Image (cartoon, rainbow, N blue to C red; front, side, top):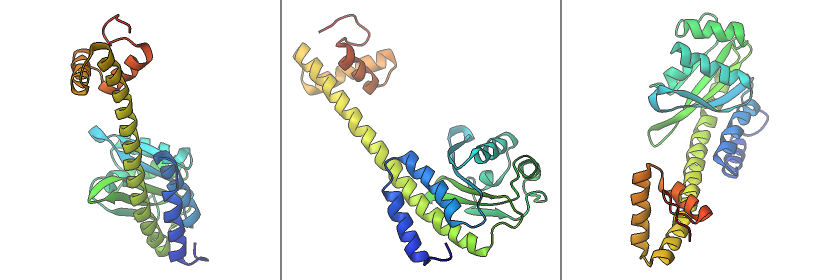
Length: 233
């Protein structure tokens, strides 16, 4: 990273992240970029805070990241707990003696060989998306330059992750709407209904069956049966 102009490098990173084919690929690439750009980083990953406070590892360069996440969930302490709660970033030079996370720090130091870390909140428009975690196998593995580069990488990662998340969910919505439209067409032809009446019929069956409309639509297209009945076309 230091051998290349930072502006050029991050311009290339932005283009590369935007070109990833899916949200999962974007998240995986963010983790591998952390290894490539942060000198002291030996393990990297992204963790999100889901409903009911569950930490979920959504990308990791190796098993160390997931194991560290699981232990934070079980102990209720660690850098992720702090970053996903209220802090923008945390760092540690020696996990064997850090009194912020006495149990977790000693556990990862002794069991995973993790001795130092950098952890950045990934956020856009004021809402937390997750955290970018970077772990080092040496005490004092991250210097001031690493912290600056890590912060810049986290900013690019947050934008790319949010954009890919939105794009992927938009694609899913378009696919679901197409499926529902095909099911409406079947009902319109079979029962001489308008599009609104066909959709209302799907909604009624969805409520009665306690199943999502798009799932019922897929079943109708595949089987030519009205969900919940034995009638075929």
